[in-house]
Length: 89
Image (tube, rainbow, N blue to C red; front, top):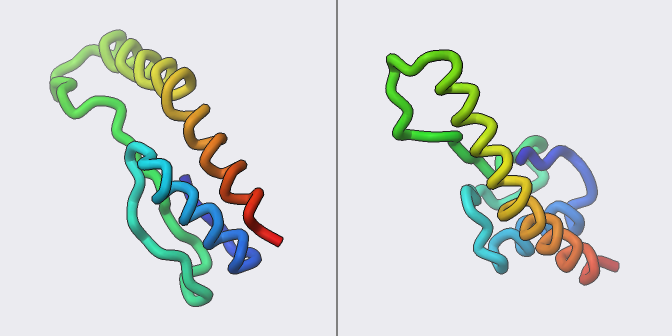
């Protein structure tokens, strides 16, 4: 997840929400006016995948990762950000 330029209060609300909800893959890069683009969440599909894996195995790993992300992580991220924005004036 990349946080782009914008209102500093909104950027801070997103950051605080992710911190407060213990989001997986969260990178603690605090937003500031001089950091226009900011990486906040980084995830790797699988660190256990062999360098010799076939295209089929890689595809299966990516699909499994995205299915788990969509079911488990994305709802938590959405909830955290929605709650964060509810505190912004």
